[in-house]
Structure formats: structure tokens, C-alpha cells
Length: 62
Image (tube, rainbow, N blue to C red; front, side, top):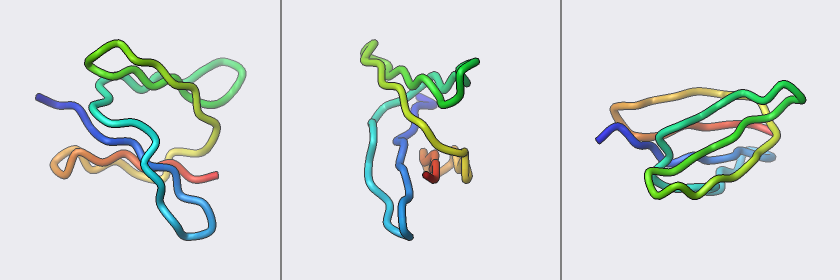
């Protein structure tokens, strides 16, 4: 499986946003739509900081 956990970093602290994400889609109005392998969706605002798919981590910053 190629799903990843998504984190948001604010003031140097990372917080888990969503687990088992397999779709990260940029939105026209800004931000991103995240979709898990189970169909759960979440919209987040922020900037992509980095992705490490070997470690299954995607990090955004606010």
C-alpha cells in the first residue's frame, strides 16, 4: 500500500491530521483535499512542506 499519514506543522510542532491518505488534491481556491483509503475526506489549508513516501509521511505548514 502507498498510503501516508498527513501532518500539519504549526510553530514547530507537528500534529496528525489524517491517517491512510491516498489522494492529495490541490484546490482552486487554495488548500488541499485529502482522501483516505476508506473514503474519509478532509480539507486543509497550508503549504506543502515535504513528502517522504518511504516513511509514509506528508507534512504541511500553516
